Image (cartoon, rainbow, N blue to C red; front, side, top):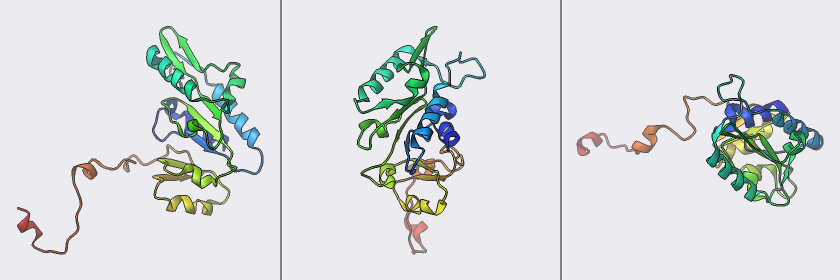
Length: 207
């Protein structure tokens, strides 16, 4: 589960629209162990020169990176806890080197009502929380992609029937999608409108 969550957050630098941006942990135990193992693994990623083939953290121009960093900071209220900070040894997740900036992988522990819980940013960023006042399914409504890790796949039925969730991945990374099926539809869906009729002479009257 830790490896799936880690790859879902950090794949391709966390820049993809179906990278994982939030985790709802509904297990009865081992929450702290899962949270800390994930945060430690994320914090172990180091910024490398973008020409280095082992580089996993995308480099950014400094001004946009600073602006995004300040914005994320402004969204972190007193109830938000940076779990990666204790493994990185610093609560700073902006790294500047040789004119390039890096937003370091970040895992924030948040409450269900926290405004930042559903935020998405173009780097390896994620939030994690345990549901108390809500059902877990309520907290993932209106999602582009949901990864459901479970010992009982049949429990994903409610997610599969929820029209507000575009994609459901059961025990798999959220980015494992078929590129032949774009999640925002095909271009033809926007250029044309479909209409059904039982009139055989439709082509004659539409000329």
